[in-house]
Image 1 (spheres, rainbow, N blue to C red):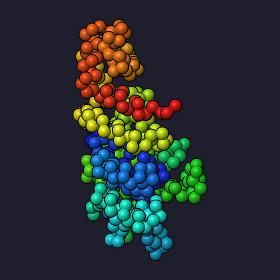
Image 2: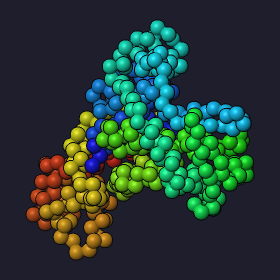
Image 3: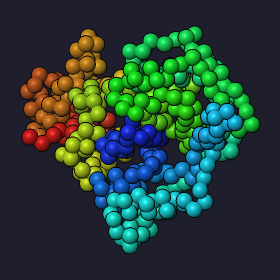
Length: 393
């Protein structure tokens, strides 16, 4: 569990932010970032060159640029109808180095300086390509009527949850031609778009968007499977992934849910790490001090079986063979987390004698002392994580 994760930006719907990267670096053994225009700029503007190099060389962050792209070629037939054809495109002149240069130059505005930065970054940036059969697999996805209808419904309801639509309400045909697909349906796109809030161009929903969504899901999951990874992406992509790849979605959704619940329960603030960095209250130099001490914590997370609960495992690991484990009520046991920080503060600051004064027996105090001297996940959580996410007064 928590070995690899891919962060896949999806335009403004799921932009990469520096806090999201930090949060995943804390929990996952490897974080793979799919680069889009402005990805490198974002990192440089928030981290600086040397910090970015440190992230890439020693902190398990990898950046991937796509060497080719899944796209929807559009043609007009003799009757003026749009013919849509899923395909893979690439540009021999648009190398990974050139893509990085464009991104860095947008950030710095200095050509020579940008080229020098590129030479530092380039050894840590990877290229990944779609195989030719991916477009054929995407066409099979498009031909799957059940999946195609469900993806239409998910897309429409993503932009306007108030629209009620069922699969049996949708009538469509995809006519195959030599150049691609002709799409006809009973959907009133003009009416659907008018009902979507914040849709000034009135064109979010159309046949192209349905097909492009299916292409993106197929391509993204191909790369993710190549890397043996979980994925963090937009809400719409996640919903479509759930429809098409139910088992993979369950695994990804469980990881995201477990981490949020762990943050919320143990740190008393879901996504606290992400937010404290995005707010500017902490930066990556601060965060490196946490990462330096997080190896054992990540290794502990890595050993948790996928069907286990992080919170439950954390509780059992921290409390096993202690006086907490002897408490009769499960409800009382959960209150252990609330008082944990106080108990450890007492032991670290004033020692066993003060702990005895709290009403613990000598045996119980020595068991607490064993926790302090050994490593358990709560040592990292209480002495490093909680201290880090506590905002400045």
